[in-house]
Length: 628
Image (cartoon, rainbow, N blue to C red; front, side, top):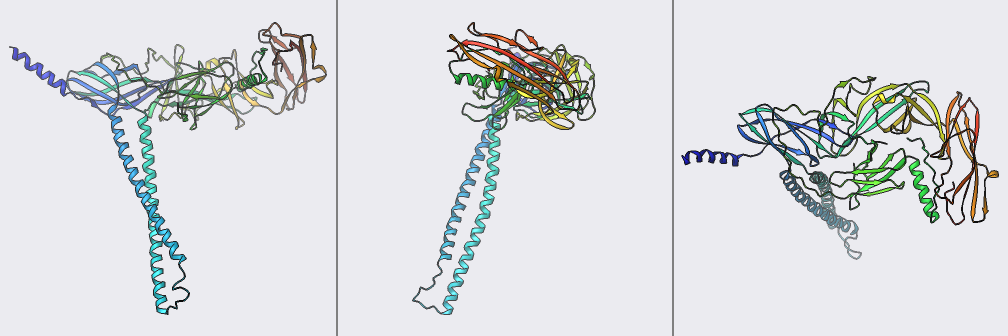
C-alpha cells in the first residue's frame, strides 16, 4: 500500500518540476490615463493544460504599483496567485547584443583607421611624384627615348596612386556609414537597457485543456495628461469657441500602440496670464541686494511664469521629466535640454518633479530660475500576491476601488476636429472615452488628444493693473462654466483666426463668472504717472516720511464703448514702526484685508478718464523699506 500512494505523489512532483512558465505575446488593449498615473490593461490568448499553469506577461513597465495588479481569467480556470518580478532574461539578452555590437563597432573603427593611414601614405607619394620634376639633373643630357620612358613611368605610377586614393576614399565613406549605423543602433540598445522591464506571472489552475483570453490590469506612475485649450474669438459680439484637448505623456517603458484611451480627472492637480495683485507687505531688509532679489522674485511670480532646468546627479539634462504644480492640474515636461517653462496664477507654489528611475522631488517656487538635480531611485521590485478566481466580473474601468459610472451625453459639441467623445461622471471624477485609437510612445513627449469642442456665450470687458503692466487686457466672462466640466490649463488664444499668444484657465480662483484673459488691446491706453509736485521725502526726528501721489489714466481709442476694471493697491504695515497715512483713492472700492483698490469705469469712444491715488509711509531712518 505504501508503494501505491508513493507513485502518484512522485508523478505530481515530477509534473511540478517539469512545469515551465509560458510566455506569449500580450497586447495593450486599453489605457485609462489619470492626471497623474495610468491604468494599463493587457490581454493575451493562451492555451492551458490540466493542472497548474504559469502564464507570463512580459515587457511590463518596472514602474508598476504592485498593489494595483488585477487579473481576469476565462471560465474553467482559477487564479492562485499573481507575482511581479524583474525581467532578468531580457536584460541578459540585451547585454549580449550590446557586447556584440560593441565588438562590431570596434572592428569597423580599426578598418577605418587603417584605410585613413593608407590614404595618408598615398597622398605623400603623390606629393613626391609631383614635386620631383627635375629629371636627370642639370648636367645630364637625356636622350629623347630615355626621357619618354621616365615620363611614362612617372605618369603610370601617378595614375596608380590617384586611383588608389579614390578607391580608399570610397572605402572610407562606406566604413563611416556602417560605423554611424552601428553606433546609432548601439545607442538605441543602451537606452533600452537603461529602461528595464518586468514580468507579471499568473499562477493558474485549469480543470481541463482550453484556450481563452487572459487579462491583467495595473497602475503605472510615470504617465499622465495635462488639459489644454484652443480659445477662438471671431468678434467681441460673438460667443467663444473652446476646444478642449489633452496632452498625454508617458515614460513607463511600454509602447501604447493604437490603444483605446480613456482620460480621467482622478487625482487632480490644479493652478492667467493677466496680472494678479498680491498683498503688499512692508519688510525691512538687511541690504539693497536682498531687497532687489526679493523684488525680482515677486516680479517673476506676478508675471505668472516659472522656468528652470532639470538634470540628473551628474549634471546631464533629463528630457521628458514631468513638472507639475502640487495640488493643481497645471504642468509641463522638460525639452531635450532639460529646460521647462510653466505658466501659473502666481502666489506660493510647490513644483513636483518626477522621472522614471529617479526619486520624486517637491521644490517650493522662489521666483528665480530653478535648477533641479534628480537623484536615482535604487528601489527593487518586491513580489506581490493577489488571490482571485476566473468567475469574477470584468475589471475594466476599475482602479483602486474607483468604479465607472453611468454615461451621459455632452452638453454641446461641434463636429470638426474632435470625434464623438463620451463623458462619464463618477462622484467627483470625470472620464472621457476617446473613440479613436492613439499611439503614445514611452518618450515623455506630450501627444495631443482631442476631447471636445463647445460654443459658449461670453461677456467682454477690459482689465488693467498699471502698477504691474501698463496695458489693457481683454477679458471674457463665462457664467455657468461649471457645467462645461473643464480643468485648469494653458490656453492658446486666437482672435479672428490670428494667434495672439497663451493665456490660462484659472478655475480655482473663479467664482460665479469664469474670467479668461484674451490678451492685450493696444487701442486702450493705460498710464500710471508719479506726480512729483505731491511726492516728497521728509526727515522728522528718527523717522523718514515718504509721500506718494499717482495719477492713473485710461483712454479708449476704439470706435466702440468699453467697460474696464482698474486695480491698484495700498501698502500693508508689518511693523509698529511703519505707519501709512494721508490715504486718498477717490471712488475706488477698498478690500480691507488686502488693501486692494478697484475702479469700475465705462468709456465712450475716444474718451479718457483719470484717477488719483495718494498715501504716505513713515519708517525709521535706519530701515530699508520697499516703498515702491
